[in-house]
Length: 167
Ligand code: THU
Picture: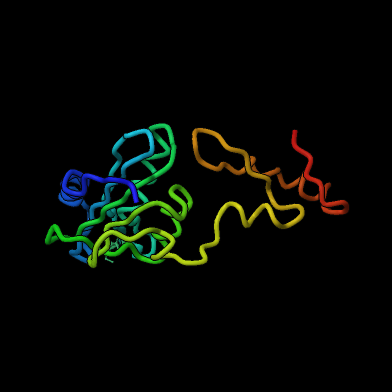
């Protein structure tokens, strides 16, 4: 496991948590991540009157990750309103997995655990490449990026032989 300054990462998560917009649940969450190139990114939950439109703190954090140059997450800490570690929800584990993979370490209430442990057998970018006709992936900025989706017309035109034409 990578050597992580969990105190610093948790402090950043607490800072983010204190900015959460959670009028409906009253449950603020902050997330902070360390990237392979040493950057720190963070995010808070942002709720919505349409409850299902709520953005989790981890999603906000990943948005900042991508906005600030992408790269790989090597460690993630999430905290609740008591400034204690909180387990990322299932959807957020998937979101973190995309940008950190199996080796990314997450601070769980029980201690640091790898993504391999918290999301075993995860579905990820590599799985997409195993199906003919699925979008191929290319590396850019340290993370896997899907080739832009073809337009509807292109989708209509392909399909017979499985190749996707791109303008
Ligand atoms: N929440 C997060 O931000 N991340 C998680 O992993 C779990 C849940 C938020 C969503 C909602 O605003 C509040 O916590 C209560 O579920």
